Structures are given as C-alpha cells and as structure tokens.
Length: 438
Image 1: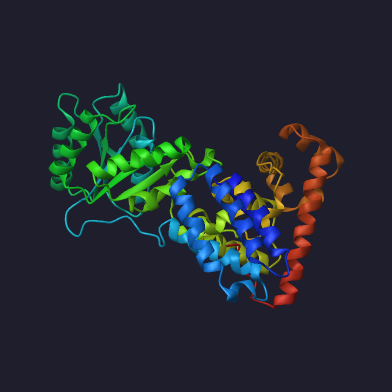
Image 2 (image 1 turned 90 degrees about the vertical axis):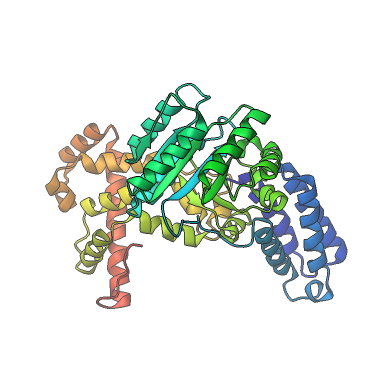
C-alpha cells in the first residue's frame, strides 16, 4: 500500500533535509517533485494542485525558510496537509441507539462488497453482537450462495430469499432482525459492471425502505482515479455516509485514498488489505499519512498485537522470562502469534525508520514457516531442553522438517543468543520488571 508514493516522498524529503539552508527556489523544486509524485500515484489533478498550493503557502514563510531545520519543518507541514487531505480524523462506524444497526453495502460489481460484508460481520461478532447478513444481490449469479459461504466462514446467520426483488428482501431482512433481536443487519446489495440508472434506482429504493444507519460505498483501490469518478456519482444519488477501499494490499499507488474524501467530503472508514476475514483495517488519516511519509505506524502495530496475542498467554510468557524458563516450545507459540498479525514485511514497515531500511529488500515470510517446521519436528523433551540435541537428533529433525542440518544449527544458535539477551535484560532491569512481549 502506497509503496511507490512513499519511496518518491522519501527521495524528495531526503534532498530537502540535506540542505542546511532552504531557499524559495529549493522549496519550489521540492514541491514540484511532490506534485509529480502525487500525479504518478493517480491522485486527482485538482486534489494534487490544491495540496501543493496549501503546502507552499504554509512553507514559504520566512519562519520556515530560516529555521534551524527547515527540511524537517517542511516534512511536518506536508504530513499535516496529508492528514487533512485524508479526512483529518478517524470516524468510527455509527451504531443505532435503538433497534438493530442497519448497514447498507453498495458499489460496483467486483469491488469486494460480499467479502466486506463478511469482514464487518466478523468485527461485530468479536464484540459479542448478533449479526444477520441479508443477501439482496438478485443480479449476479450465485451471489446469494457466495454470501452464505462467507456467512458460514465467520459464524454469522444469513437471510436468503430467492423469489423477491431486492427492496422486498432488504425490508424483510430488517423486520426479521428486529423480531429476533439481532444487533446488526448488513445488506449486501447488487452492483453492476458500470453505473446505470437501474442500479441507482434500486439502491435509492432500498435506502428509503430500510433507513440504514450507515450506507457504505465499496471502492476497488486498484481502479485508481476511476474510483473517485464512481464515488462522485454515488454521492450525488445515494448520499452514502462512508467509504471502504478494498484490495489496497495490491495497490502500490493509492491515488483513490488520497482523492476520494477531498472530492466527496465523505470519510474513509475502512481499508481492505486482503481476502481473509481479518484483513480489514480501520482508517486513521494521521496513521496513514505517517505510513506514506515513512514515519511508521506504531499504534496500528500495537492494536494488531492486542488482537492477536492472548493476554493470559502473555502473562505466562513474562513469568517464564522472569524465571529464565523460556523454551523452544514458547518460541514456537510466539511465532504463531506474530504470524496472526499479518505479513512480516508489513509489520516491520510500521516501525518508524525501518521502512526506509527495507527499501529494495524483501522479507521472507517463509522463513517463519521453516522455523515452525523445525521446532515441530522435535520431541517435547528436545523443545524443553535443546542441549540434548546431538548430531543424530539434528539429522532426524532436518529430515522431518525438509530442511538441512545447517538450518537446525542456525536455529539453535539464534535461540541461545535470544536466551542470553533475555538474561541480560533481566539483570539490567532488576527482578519483576521484564515487560510483556506486547
């Protein structure tokens, strides 16, 4: 997400920070590069022009130009304007004060509406809410079957009626949710390959009949600038309340995210980062701006850790660290929890400064898989006490895991180094002060 844009911004800011004194000429040259980077990221031309104009107005003052660190000050101004461009502040999904929360999901065909319905259902289910998914896509073959599969995968109930139109289906779904005490009802409406009058008329009728708490427009992040054009039309006819950008894990430009809120005035609420039910992030303008400018995103990293790491397990792990009883079995548990948080490269990029160090490098997630295979090929005794691993045992482990003896040795060496580091941490911090893993 935003890899190309982040790289171009990094190049521009590195040149600006390298200058001891920033002149107006230097500033204008840098901002020209910023505008070019935005346009290459498929940002709306008017949005890019307005953005650079605002940055230039704030950065052209004598206070900045003569500052002790003018390059850093310009980066701060760009960051602030980027936050404003992305919507200024995070807005959470609205919930109804009484009765079930009604969420209408709309968008063009292929944008990922049905998948999003499952992801939203999962989020509510994790909070202890009862969720009803309503299959209101009567246009696409097997759309209702797909929603049933999605519903089963996350544990949500699905209402399907194949002999009625979308308006009647949605109205009945909301009535059933009210009668049976559901907390949330999510309406999966139909899309088209392109915007047409029939699609808009149907969505207007569904909205009038169900009075949704939230009307979410799903936009395919891979379509770039065209996503903004779609949003403008939907905004005029449907007056949606929030945007969800999907497939952002495959979009290295991200122009839609940088344009849609500025053009429509409607906030982005979520970003889809994959097909799995858990691959949905709340959208925080300040955090996203920091990611784009290579400043990391520690808060999102912490939130992912809190979602993935079992609290009791973390407490037990801290106690083992305190008593110097950390074993390969515990190491395996830690690896499994890290894998739940997402691709390792994405996690590392959220750490300030690390993203720049990873430039041009790739992080091998399969390395974690190989380590898991190595540890799982050991007996419980070997995991608890690696000192018993002689040559023949190491050969057996290598054969069982499909690796080599060298990899077994490398793992054991890394584990010993980790134990030494933990012992050093304990001695420096004193008793009872080893932090939890997350």
